[in-house]
Length: 162
Image (cartoon, rainbow, N blue to C red; front, side, top):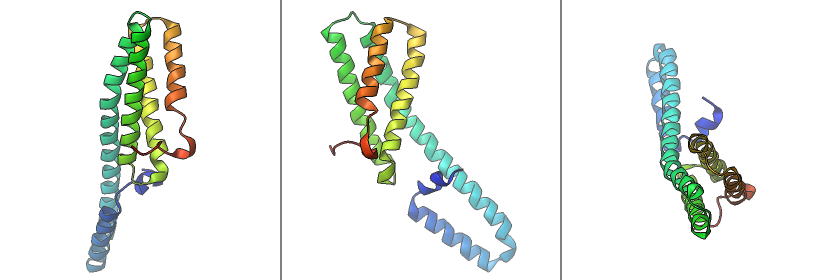
């Protein structure tokens, strides 16, 4: 568990847990070591479950995006394929930014959460490309477009409000 993980836990839950532990430690000093271990375990489980939940949400956004991008890449070159890729990237960007704003408890971390979505999309796209293949130049252009359109996130902001 990192200090960064603790910062993402909701404040009321953390305060409530702290109050319960303090009261229990005052009422029964012999319980301090087991309480300390239980609190550490509880915080670790909470942080882990939040991380897994976020990973699942990201995967549900990335999977159909990768499928749609690969369909666009494998389609015959032309304006329809290009439009499909652009539409898919815009939709992904909108949903990823929206999720990043909703998920983080600290506005300063919105950009980091958004970039996590984009990195996951790149990894999954690379895996799909290795499995399915296709025109390498179109794939390289898509990656360049992905970097150009989705990665710039000046100041950690999540873009203009919707």
